[in-house]
Length: 531
Ligand code: B12
Ligand code: SF4
Image 1 (cartoon, rainbow, N blue to C red):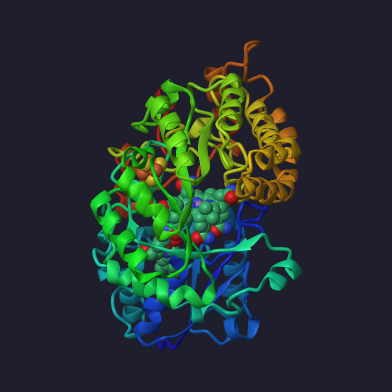
Image 2 (image 1 turned 45 degrees about the vertical axis):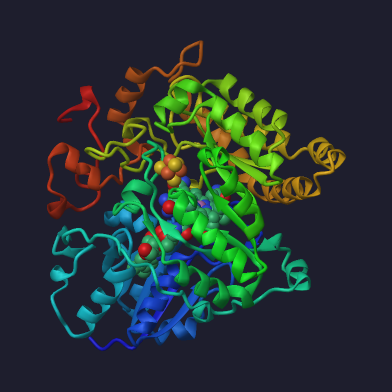
């Protein structure tokens, strides 16, 4: 089929999230668009929060490429359904949602690109354009009659040299303070990448299955060229690397180069607590312009840290916080709550820790348990019969989507709401100002503002959770799992059923997956076997 014009579209989640008042293109979609543009196609990219897709361009396209996280999936599917029905344009979906739930996507599109799509997308589109055999394209899934076929996996790229062209993004430009004010935006950030993947294997994190080819660094010249290219969009840059300093010798070389280049950026990075042991690294980070560090602390409870296989201790966390604060970094702490070892007391202790340690900001995520995460066998961190699935829109990191073992879902949900309120309370802002930490105060004001937009969703959801959990917990708020399993057997309506590649664990070849809905399970509970 002739392919000339390709339109790439990415929707936001259905509910407000922490990007709600942010202008920040994702790194993935523009990269995919750029690969296609380099291959000679006419590409336009629409990111919903920057500029919604223009109907005339959509109607004039030969192919649509969509990218979505879980939270935007329903919206993406509605759009894809509409385009298919009215215009019949072929559609490819890629990104996190597509990688883990290809069956769900293939109900609304023609091809799914699994995992890192940099090389796959060009090969797929070229193959379609010349009428070739898509079965030969590694790293995709597609419908073949009433079956879904996956082609052989494709390793992620080893060279990450391409500079994404942000000019392909409709309406994207450098914003002035006046623009931000008019659009009621908190700030704008430019994304950058210096590495992909992570050498660790935390059980709640998707990195090892999403970027399955392991930790890879980008050529330093490419990073510098990319930064110079992006300077025209602003000076606030976030490195989207999963772990910025996983190989410290490389990171130090990169930082020295950034210092030499005098690029005048303000950077933020994601980095583990180990960086605190290395003063030379911290000094270079400061001198290169890194002003804030997002650290995954995950839990203040040692058993939970062990269960997450985080490979860090509470003592290391405290050491890192003290050291990073001494160096003048703002710390954004991230915590994952609702593990089988967590109780209501864990939430209280987490909030106390955040306040006591004066973190500039913190993010509390309820476990999202439906990814097939475990290295061997793709087991989910939370078994499917303990999942709560009301729709993709709720899988956004703010709604509780599982039955915790030692507290009710509604208690966890309320605990999270109260925690955010406590963290961003006016008293905390005043306390930061009294300590002379203006930037700390600014984080709290900004995130407190966004939290006010986010809160109504999770708050309204509490009533749904209360109804759902009725009868499933004992007097001490412990989950009665046998009762839950019995109920799921009778009425699986709210249990997550869109499982896919974890079906491998029950012996179905991923190349011969039945269509979603027929045998869609993520793993088998011991006493549901064969049901
Ligand atoms: C950096 C980051 C952020 C930053 C920057 C976000 C941004 N706008 O860029 C911040 C901190 C602001 C953020 C915010 C949020 N994030 Co975030 N974030 C990440 C992180 C660490 C890296 C993302 C990244 O840029 N990777 C690098 C690029 C190159 O990879 P990529 O985007 O996946 O793209 C590749 C492939 O997916 C594929 N691909 C992607 N799209 C397409 C499209 C087509 C057609 C094709 C063929 C291929 C393809 O090819 C690309 C190149 O290989 C990921 C974790 C991860 N995935 O590793 C979480 C992650 C994406 N975030 C997550 C979440 C939940 C959020 C929030 C919703 C949290 C909240 N409630 O506020 C918000 C909102 C995000 C939004 N609206 O975009 C979740 C998503 C879960 C899910 N499956 O949906 C992740 C996976 C973390 C997690 N919990 O495990 N995030
Ligand atoms: S949580 Fe952080 S350290 Fe753990 S695997 Fe994910 S990116 Fe790596």
